[in-house]
Length: 126
Image 1 (cartoon, rainbow, N blue to C red):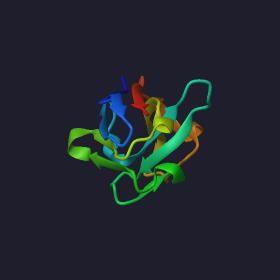
Image 2 (tube, rainbow, N blue to C red):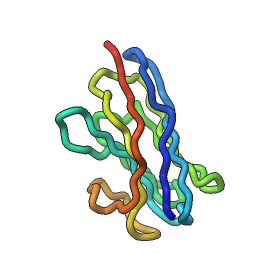
Image 3 (cartoon, rainbow, N blue to C red):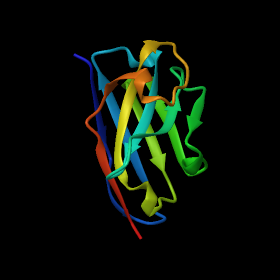
C-alpha cells in the first residue's frame, strides 16, 4: 500500500520559516518525480514545487521562487519543502504527491500525480 505522510506544518508569523517533510512508503519513490501542492480555503489546489527523481531538477510556482526550496533524500524516501520569508498568502493546506510514472518530467498539473498525502496546515499570521 502506497502512502505519503506530510508533517511540519503549523502557525508562524509573517517572515518566518517552516520545513515540511513528506515521508513515503510502499513504492520506490526514488524513481518518481515528487511535487508539493497547496489549497487555500475557497480556492483550487495549486502547484507549488516539483523535483525530479534524482533531485537534479526543480521547478517552482513564480510566487514562491527564491523563498521556497524543494529537496529530497531518496535513501529516506522523503521529500522536503523549506519555506522561508513566509507571507499570509502562503496560508493553505500543503500536500505532497508522487508522479504516476517513473522517471517522468516536472509536472505542474495535479492530474499527473497519482498518490497524495493527507495534507498539513500552514498558517502565516500578519
